[in-house]
Image 1: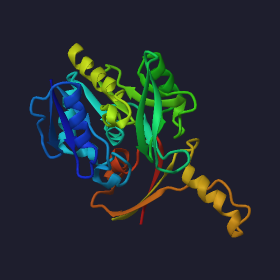
Image 2: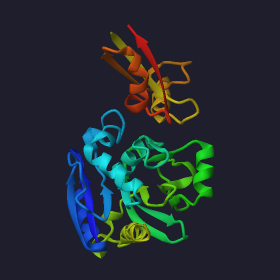
Image 3: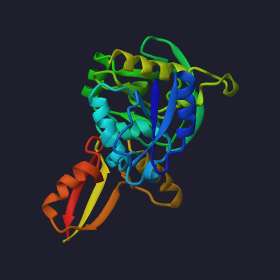
Length: 212
Length: 73
């Protein structure tokens, strides 16, 4: 399996994302934001960081990059896409995922290990580090997300540190091939750093690709 | 044409910046100020002001979380 990791000016987690993709399965390569083609990759990661300086709103400018146009086409064709942190914000701004990410309730940038629960009830311990991670969608949209099984990850009890609606940490699109989450699975793929739970997120994305 | 776009958090959405400003005011001796909301202002010059609405919908504001107001000057 070949993964592509999109790099914008201001991305900062693309190296860890490449490493995580390689550990999870196969090989990975960087895709510069000016590329109009994804080069035949099997899955795409939009990594964390501060694309285009987070100017205007996090993710607002990155969505207009040539690479994101290619990603939108790839996603529409059923290709698996994973957005992490700023990548999640980019996917929401691009309309590939529902909702928006707002400033954390307490306004502070928070960096900590966080406990998540996946849709099947499995627990993951992975790091989170962001200032704008408060998931928001209108109430009726939240109801639909829950009814459709699109809430992929929630903060475990007492772990919702940013004020996200209904403890939502990550969502998928209706088709299930696009996934975004605020915490960082790519930083939790080696026992050296305390947890390998992040690999399960990459494996879930790879499995979505296999089904497509 | 010169224009100014005011962008503010939608009503009903928690605005922690506004709250933080509001909470700081009494310590500075400003009493009786409430419902503080913090937004953004974008100034621009447009050849075709007719398209400013579209520009706001697509880029300057996120209509899911923000309201905008266009003032032509």
